[in-house]
Image (cartoon, rainbow, N blue to C red; front, side, top):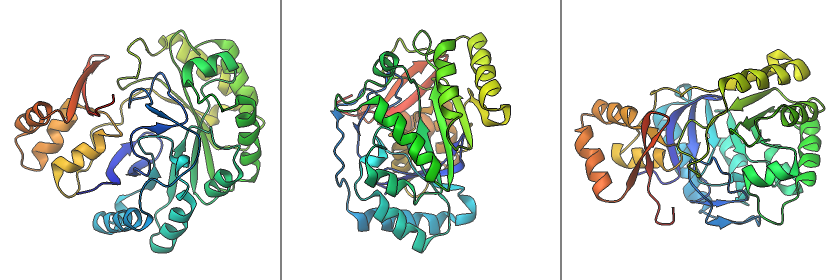
Length: 317
């Protein structure tokens, strides 16, 4: 049974990504209104150890060897919270690179970049994805709901500094939320800032999974097109991509299929029809399995934008 590893899952940015859950639910520096894992009960900014390094490393390496490195595009730190809160992050990455050749990625909300040790850890990683949802202080507070000790100006300065020294692939991601940051002024602010940094690409996303706040909705299609064109005109068309579709159903269940499914949906809410398909491919009665998990209180079903999703049910959600 996997405790720290899930997938591989299809990633819109990374291909087939083997997820690493190095932070338990839900310890984060933000409590984003659109987060697929719900509100943050453990809002914190102090780095610490969450899991034993040896157990984490052993599970990652053994899983990679079982699946095969050729079947994984990236090993990705994308946990139930902010991955840079893990003070052992750099040590784990260094040890992984001695045992496997698969590229390593991390999806971070950028908030801890003002810490030098965080920047040092990220320098070891092949692909770093940083979140920039807003550069206006008021909108940043609304959309990301940051820990009160965080300062947006320090985060922005740290992103710029990191981008100039990082030699891997740096990408940005901006989540567009209707009636929050879907305005021309904010898009121009973001575009003009990232133009001054060294980066590979910026991805514009919309909420496609059940968000922390039920009122969160994607912007109108017209604004998505407008945002794409604003950024393209300022940073270059080849530097901007939209992430407005589902990744598809190409997930993988490793080991115990039910335990693996639970591991996936603890981080990655899954469309119910995809879950049925996965379980049926393993010879299971998919409807019975989902019904049993539901009755046991292990999953929750959520309707969003015309689809039914299943997510791992946490007691403090």
